[in-house]
Image (cartoon, rainbow, N blue to C red; front, side, top):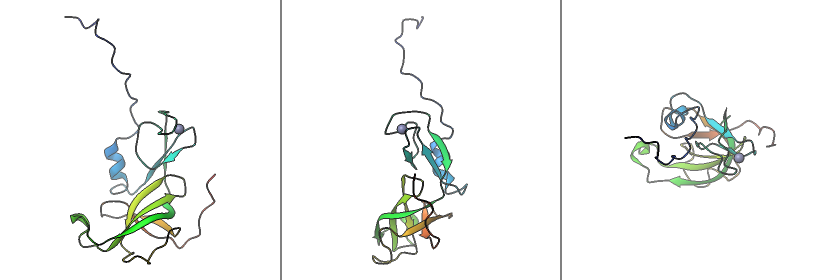
Length: 145
Ligand SMILES: [Zn+2]
């Protein structure tokens, strides 16, 4: 049999510079956070093969500082098994200085009122799962371009 008459398949996706497994383990094992910038200016901290805004495939990977501002948070009193010895703690949504948002957790925040929207935080490399943040006492870097 010949498959010369077979219809052409979808175009192959480009090979990413990294796998999602590498990305997920980057902050846990390699002690680094990665961001992705599109030519259109869109920045995300979420792994992907395409820009969700313009659809381009040539995302540029760069190292995130891990610094940002609290956009939202809640206090977890009923944690998953991995965090059972850490509760209560804050589950935070952080607007990163470079752009993009990242969710993580803050073991230093034990009650509503310990943290405010707009507070400065920074990533802390940790052996624990997830992205851990702590208060950042240093002033904010230059505003986003
Ligand atoms: Zn784009």
